[in-house]
Length: 383
Image (cartoon, rainbow, N blue to C red; front, side):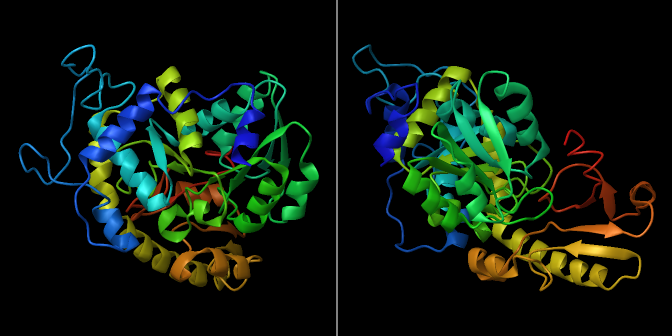
């Protein structure tokens, strides 16, 4: 089925002997140390296959600020696993392996932003004349790039309500190459039944990608629910401290990974080694942060739901959420993330402009700071 899916694209895959794939295999072998079996997700988030530096014993992966890597000879090209940092860098590769491990994927590419990961996915699996079924409520940048860049290049997109999987299947066309989920959606917190939509995608021989930034792998891993690819904006919960920007595209299989790695290498869509180093450290507290953020969000949502100046509150943990059953089934350990939205009775702009600390009016999510935003005028102004 996978071979049939990939064969439908206009661009063919390279062989498994591609240099970037050989580099990845080599880097994995360099980290082949003994580990305690059956480590928990929390352990993988902290350690994730990272081993002490073989030469110095440094417990943290070093920052390799080197453009190029010396080869012993032409015949031994790539014997050490690396040649040029656009293709692979040791620090970035360690982050990619760690992200893939906790997302339960084969491997991943880490790029400069979450939007770069989204663009890489569409570039990898769609061409002029192809069609994508995509959620009608997504991150504003995702919606915009589909309409403003990929549409004029000859690709078509059907924006449908993914709350009902039947809508997804009804929107499929003979030239549909990609189903693009987002769960929970940004900013409406609508959920997609990933198991049901993945079953539809598999039955029709279509790739299914899910942007799981709002959930994170700590709450939901789309690859465990039949998806072929996962998108993460690492800027959010992975970083968690408002320090850096980054994105990841995680592949379930070697074939899918080779395709996205080729696209990354051709486009030069990479992450800096210093950013990768910082994210390798900040992501260690992701589990702790998400548990506390989920707890705090539930308390705030409950408070707002009974507030006389609030007309509506939406949070997947509330009994009033229209998809509460799906949220409990698809989200891990009763955790539903650190995002909620609400409507006020009166002027919301007045609330935003007069907000007091510790709340801050700005764009981003998933970090330790408490942020409030008017998405209709800021992050989703183009929709």
